[in-house]
Image (cartoon, rainbow, N blue to C red; front, side, top):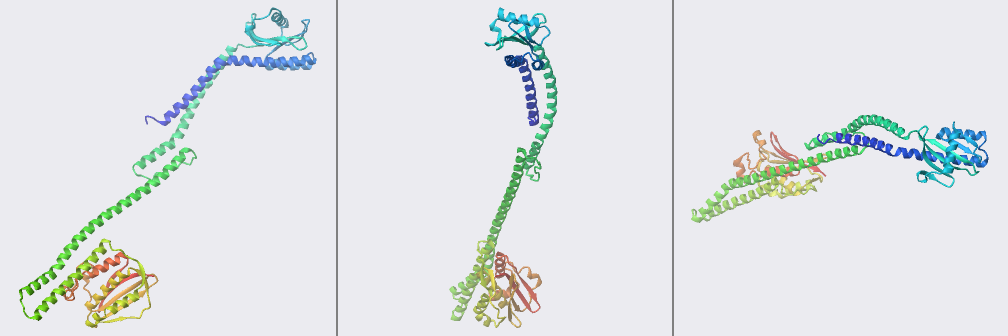
Length: 487
């Protein structure tokens, strides 16, 4: 990567370490001398306070205070000289007290350049001086104690510049080791910090190509883990959203297919209507022209012509109504109203309404005296299904001319069947019975005015309620059946 975070992270950290070490070198060079002198000043003032208190209490000449002076000398590297009014040394801690005494007297009686003083109070003065014999620099403090004794405290500065140089060299060596160690540490840390980021980058790359299987698996508790968990949730949300979009797209395709199917059904509907209406229209037109031209003048013939025209018109009306009903069912525009009703009462009422038709065709109906059986379904459409089965049974019954109605109830469903005696349906016709305008015996269908649409309506109604239906052949007849949910 051209702009790698790992590289930037390493460069920034190394720059910070190197800059810190360089800053320490600069501060050490410029400020260490001043700091060292300030520390010496404080040590001299503390030593003065201790000596002044001991002299005021009369303890300065004791052996116990000799031990205290020894501690001050060893801790702060301070030389001490205390003299009385006769210039006799009371206490001293150097090898050449005479030389120090001479210098003390020179400071007191000859005076010093006060501009060069580090401290100047009523009790003492402090300055940096150079011993011309040894060329050693000292910071000296002199003055008078509260009991009238004169004192001189001095401490060698020990070549402060050399100390600073040594300190800087040591700091440089330590700095090089620190930079090398930091480089290794930065390399390890950058790998540790950038590894999960690179993992997240790979996951996002896979997500870009709609691959949502990759998940962040880090077990740390850092902000990167929070980001990883958020990316995991984002991945799941995107997968769910895309799934919903695909589902919606699939439904849209189905809607388009349904629209195409509806268009095809409309074209088929028009084609079927035009085909099925050709014959009755031709008959009506022929007999109407015969009436107008007066082919037969007797009243009986004219009445016959009129009966034919009315009969064909009624058949046309019935067929058109059925086609419209079927078209509504197949297109899905017909609403199914699911309700609870007594199917036994529905069947009995319909049989009663067909009493005249049964007597005309000399058909007997057998049905047990069932108790009320409640089901779920569209009562109006269920009645239409039963009506189609029942009228088909009347029109095709033969032999003993018996129609047997059965209502069989189970825990979950109710099965209603209509059996009529007569000839079984040819096996090759069974699978085509539910097709529009399919007729097993066209001559007989024409005789009772059938259109071949009734069973297609049954199929559409039962499928709209998601229920089963069918037909069973027997040696002595045919049984049509359908199932409803028990209520």
